[in-house]
Length: 462
Image 1 (cartoon, helix red, strand yellow):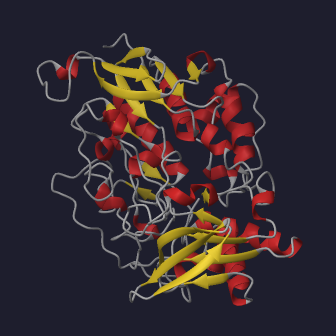
Image 2 (cartoon, one colour):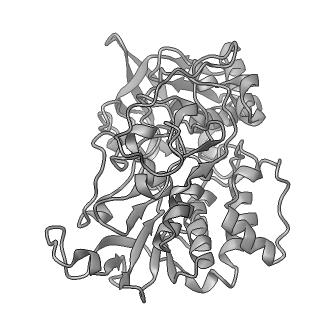
């Protein structure tokens, strides 16, 4: 087992960070990326400018390797686009001689198991290598698996019940998933047309603002926005109270467009049915009181978040929370039904461990359906996991994270909120335990955080 590599699935920000930490620890590794480039998923939203500055988007181990190679770091206070994140950070990192020979592109993992053992077999399991099968039939052995494949390829459906809305498959040609390039490559699909954006988070907000800009330049472009909540305050965010000014400005701009009537807002509305209508789509939305109304549109943007796909690990012994699809230990710390933006604590290998020793889902996938994941959180996850794989359990359990305050905290968290929470500098669990899990079970974290004066309930993203 010790002679086999650790296999990292995915060469996005968190996967490449894992590779950097594995290199620093002197552990053999292989990174398998389904796409053709480093950060393939990030490149799909290359036109979007994030509102967290560069300082929060760089992993420490990756930065050390890049600095040694003479990398010119970007302005730590600048806000990168997805394209800049990929071109100026992820690709240079992937091209380093310490990492490049260990990266394989076009290598899609379709299944992970134990060599010669299915999920039922116990004898010798912990001493048996992992077996990874690729889409082309090739098989690899590994001592451990760090799954950083993310959730970008498995977006949520439009239907409010977790099932596709009636007729959703029949109108697929009119559907867009999160973050289309409204002002660039996808402009012709939206200019002069009526678009319905569904979703309450920052992906929806970004798309709505781009559509509003397009409407100012292209006559006949109209925008409707549907959210399940009866109050859009959480979507507008913390405004001036947000420690990330660009994040606060996002909500202010969105509110201004809604107040001016440039964006029509349907609150308390969920998509129930979709029907083709002479080259357009008739969308039936249901309100919280059961009333229905119909709106006819040309395009629909489903900014409804993402969900993890654990099917590749079906033959592994996973301990998944029945609600979120995260590990059972992590779920209470991130559950958006119970937690607001500032209450997700630092966490690491203990909270990410499964009964299948040596398998860890990290990054966005580790959060299941919870929308509170931050890139910096993923970097701390892989630092902790790799330290554990190296046998350095003191470092693995000394989890630390410093994040910008959101300026918005609310206990009225909604499942459909597409937000990414952050909190003040923290160490260990929210209970104050300095690293690792305490001897007694961790109870629900209290929601007695006082919002900034004058702020509305809401959430935040990065």
